[in-house]
Length: 358
Image (cartoon, rainbow, N blue to C red):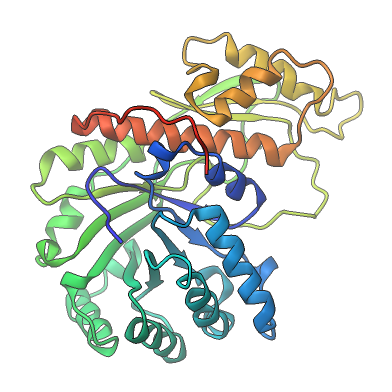
């Protein structure tokens, strides 16, 4: 598995919208993306059956692609469930695609680390060490990291380092002092910084209005990329909040809203609750799509599958689509947009566009 400076490393919770967004990337964009797949609790239980795990692994390969790299992170499951599942999923997935990374951390349980060590010893999988900003501030963190790697019988030069700053201020942050405090920065197989600024929900935004939210993680990485000689890849949480909260199936009165990444940040068309008295319900999506398609920031239907979906719905009068489809369209656009941004920032020529999808 390769993570280069021009790679894009987004976090994707493994749910329907994210799967659809990843599957429908064009081949040239997908080749630049190394997604971190975060398994969500709804698919797992402590006593999940081996057959179910094999089925999940095959679904993972079908969505991520048989020829593309991706990273598996089971942290949201808790160490107990993660330890009971990670080997079966990864071993099955690597039967079809060996270009897989497995996430661990400095505070994982001994049982989980043993499972990861076993996978690494019997397969070509790569180790990804995900260190949070809180962990990074610990006294003696370099020694702690080296102790973890020693237990896993590996070294820095064969490990991908992922520095996860989680939720940061919308105006961004200065990554440079953080990375300069790690004297072993040049020792790693790759280094990625990961952060997000998208709010946990849209409740603070006025309904039936357009809003432009700052996207501080992007200029923060650009500043870093221009300031350090060590290649550092960019990672984010796409158009979702960094801290996971599973609302699926809970019957919330969500707003019909569109999230769309633009050069200046996140453009949000904030609708009202679909269950409000007198609400237009899902029809709001069609009106918002029409407004978005008329704005100069809109990239046009051919830009990505997500943009094509928005363009199509801007002319639709009946078939509105649901929240999963609209989130998927926004994520698909965001991934494509970010890959192109990284290429422009680094002066990397965009490849000849391949309109086929995985």
